[in-house]
Length: 511
Ligand code: KIV
Ligand code: ZN
Image 1 (cartoon, rainbow, N blue to C red):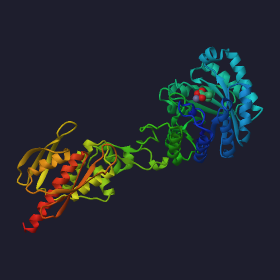
Image 2: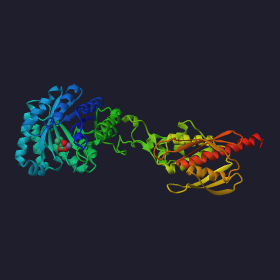
Image 3: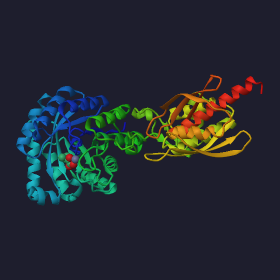
Image 4: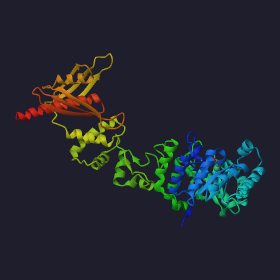
């Protein structure tokens, strides 16, 4: 059996330190419930002395966690902090006090203004003071990532000797390179007496975008706890992202000799919940939980994924609770992707017909970033309604505005192949377009009804126009047209109705 890696979630403490991500107790409880459902091992519920709200959150989360997970409260290496944390943690069945202080030259010299010997003494004292209240005490060596290694070994030795059950080695400023960080953890494993009897934790920040790599380098070299947050929330560039380390361990368990007990199918739900509650959007290309994590856009990739999902996907979306792989239809999509989506929508075409649909799809895709199902349906329906093209609207140019006189220039080809370029003015752009069309067509219909609706989503949606025109004999003919330009849709709808009228007249005359 591989080593169990304990997942210590600090979304509610370090994650909440993200600017703009503060949460109230009720919100923290909702997130804590999801963390419990997901099977994390430790929830760092807050920093009790920092505010009455944090105190209450730790207290309430302790109440709901029961035996399911450890509930942890953060303190500085100060007796009063520890007293308050211990009080807040009284409700927890499995309480942990997380205490410690800075250990790097910069923290000692510029922040704490203490000597190395004083630091070691305070490390011992805070652990033994916390031990008066709870058995489970985690010691953190803040800014361990920039500390002198020999000194770090001495501090961690002092914490272990004082009874720490967990020693947390943070790269507080996200400064390290993965190899160097791994070597630091390895050196602690080799040089601190009794370290094999405590849990070694890594707490890494993402300032160089390497928090996940650092945490995994720590695991590879002996750490068995990772401190992380949902969506990688946290101070500055954030903490290690829970979903990333959990999935990396799942995929590379053998290499890392590691596993976690996190229920990975809950990851997407957790991510969305935290994003909704904190108001912090997840970037679309975020690993594991981003909106594009399983979306395929280029034609080559789409073709591969449609043949076999794992040609371009290393994770089955179902494993993280995501809806499924997504094929994004855009101007980069090829025949395979379009044919596949059309068949999912219930449409199949012979090759020559399909080429036609594909051309129309490309025209729409050139005008829109993404082509949705509704767009495809509009394309297919437009084809189905096609009547013999007695007149074809090739182009339409409109000039209108205030105080301009609405003017339309239409290019129309008739069934003999002759192209006519005509212009007209009107009371508005549609009126001008219809008058221009009337200059070419051999029949005329009075506009009886005109309706426009957006049939697809977005500002660049396809608009469909339906018209009903009345012929001289009183008969009514309908026509429809769809385009991203509403005036072009209107002109297409009118030409479509005219074509229908002529076709009907001809069939009656037996032509
Ligand atoms: O980044 C850090 O060092 C911390 C400690 C308080 C654990 O968040
Ligand atoms: Zn931190």
